[in-house]
Amino acid sequence: MNARSTLAALLLILAAGPPGQAAGQCILANPSFEITGSGGAVFGGWNQFGVVGSVTEASHGLLAARVSGPNAGDWDVSGYWQSMDCEPGEQWEATGRLRHPADKPLTGQCAALVNVEWRDAGGGLIDYESFAVADASSPADEWLDYSVTSAPAPAGTATARYLLGVLQSPDDPSPDVWFDQVTFYSMTPPTIDDLQWNDFPGGRTVEFADRTWRVKGPGYYGPGPSSFCHLPECVWVDAEDRLHLTIKLFGSTWTSTEVVLEEALGYGDYVFTLAGAVDQLDVHAVLGLFLWQYGPCWDPAYLWWNPYNEIDVEISRWGIPGNDIGQFVVQPYDWWSGNLSRFDASFGAEELSSYAFEWLPDRVEFRAWRGGPEDEAPETLIHAWSYSGPHIPRPEQPRVHMNLWQFDGPPATEQEAVVHGFAFTPADGPVGVGEQPELPPFGEVARLFPAAPNPFNPATTIRYELLRDGFAEVAVFDVTGARVRTLVSGLVTAGEHETRWDGRDDTGRRLASGVYLCLLRAGDFRTAQRMVLIK
Image (tube, rainbow, N blue to C red):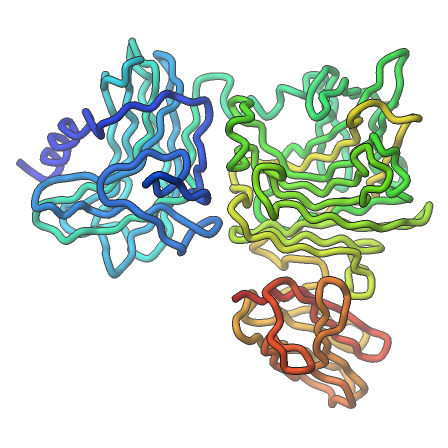
């Protein structure tokens, strides 16, 4: 029997297991393995068998799932699995990322497996499909993408089981395979792509910030829930390319408004600029600037792992006049401590203010400052917060949403918010307002290069260049705008220079991990960039 037929025969035997029965669910839980389990389970939401664990070298977030060959002297399998509700005829697409490390690689006839198993209402196996998604020929120490599509589920199917496994051969050493960022979606209509647009039946779009946005409604939807108006008198873009969102009263019905970007942008820096005194919004109004992805179902029981890939900038006092006006949120805000950071500020009637989140695989960095995108600097900073917890959105298809909606009753009067601009910089390009490309252009007299490494521990190097001799200052500020370290201050000759910051303040005290701003000042010219100190 050759290796392929040996594998097929073995999988036929193993497909009847692993033992145990799990009821189906409508959405895959904890698909990036960020929430640890209890009672012996490595990860929340996942069943397991054989030799399994976790690793901290993840493709997304802080953790990935480790599956090891059992190495019991015979053919065997270890793995993680979940069961999804399924009807006969449904097809499924399974995607994810995997890696086998060079110190414990796949060798010989060992393989990384993805199984799709069809089971009846009692958990009994009806049929299965097995896919070898990596083997000894796959490159080690690289994250590899996989995508497999099942055949239609056979008659009698009640659940589809998604299994991530490692096949151990009797003659080869035990391998490790790491899995991360997995998905398992039905391809039977309505697909996950179709579901993104159920709340937008009116078909209206607007052009804003050189992008196309769909307008929500008409209909009664969340958040709120509210009646959403899609008409031009409710949502419009003015002659200055500013987006207007409203809460309006039509007869006895209060309506809210929302737009969503047609394309999903992925990792990167999202910057929203607002115009006017947004702190004067009614206490029952909420202005939201956020990422969100509609799922195949809505179930509050699943909110513990951020199934809808939501992060928010929210401007609201949430019905209480004394509350702070703003908050940064990574959902779920109420299931997990440390997922919300509030701030307060007041603004003039014509003042611009900007709000941003830089979404990266291992963290989200939120900032708010006075002025437009080009004005981000320590002296304009309102608030900053860096999140590296277990609820970082996954790069599936969360899209930018902006809405103005009523919370806990209608406002006293009709409301309007003006979005002055929106900008996005992808994570594989120059990221973040104030940071520069690899060869940044000169300002009036100087330029600042990205700190390297960044994030860093224990130290980073800061390079800068002056066009002519003169006074220059390089200083580090914390997120409150307080100066913590002066690195350079005095006359500096023209040309390239570098200085080193060791993560300490001017007294020599080691600073806490978090986001810091490096400011270069030369004459009247100034620019800043963000640095992340990690421990």
